[in-house]
Length: 363
Ligand code: F6P
Image 1 (cartoon, helix red, strand yellow):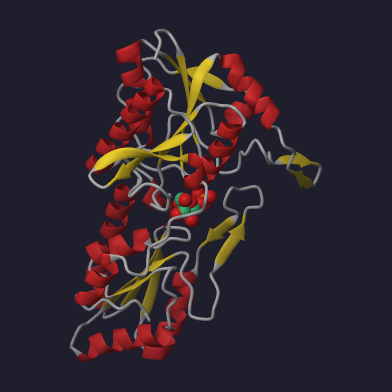
Image 2 (cartoon, helix red, strand yellow):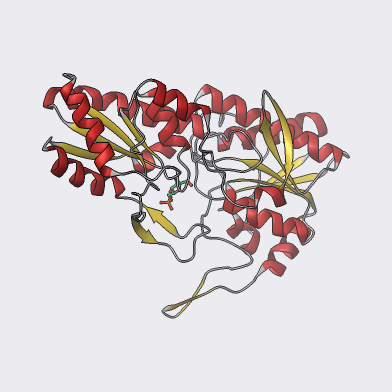
């Protein structure tokens, strides 16, 4: 990387713990090693379209390692190729990518670092084809990005969901209840699977394994027979019964991922109470899972990926996303990442581990 060059950063999609640590990783390394000028586009791709950006000097990125959210703001709806625009009561989606490309060029930046999930990377992949030198950095609590073994934000969300499950044990025990914990994860079951195993859930339900509520009720009744006073069920928001459907809380037409899940835990709760006659309650953890300070693991990972991105810039390798590969870091093409979410494979070892300790998947 030549001296005195400009690097632009933006953060897109749902926020998660660790984004600021990644911004800091990119900015500190590029400033310290190359004296680079860093600018940050605001509110995801909105900033690129509306030409809103600010300087990120060394002081700005100091002290943000432990901060949740993103200092740049983010958006789950801003897409330069389908830019949601209100015309009276109607929503239109014009392609304003030319404006985004022009705005980027006018900053004089040599590249754009996009920190985001699958929606952000899909747009990044198109912008890259259209001529912007881009490096992606993977983040999401859902852990569902292709090409990387893990994303930062996930570990923090697993901690929060596990803490939720832990706390429900005592109240479930006191009241001899079934407690259902609905966790996020979108169309992937990573969060429910990991927090369910970590929290010792008796039943784990994930989108990849459609459940039969009779089997879930059997598991609850079998525990009762063994003298257990309660059962805990961790259910992923995107789960569905065999032959049934997902529960959609609402549709957000202008979003990268228009389906907002929410409520499958209540549907299951009613069925389980009916089938077992055991008092059942449902808790939806929701956006709590995206908030607060990142775990040490996520801080380390985000810092590693951020600094790795600067290595790629130095080598002039664009059109790719930095990634976790086994015990090390690598990179993957944005085109591969844009091919859709990475769900839990049926033969994932953690599913077997859970089954080995008696966990039911409702199948
Ligand atoms: O992708 C992250 C995520 O938190 C998903 O787990 C969840 O389905 C979705 O975003 C919620 O979106 P919103 O913040 O728009 O409610």
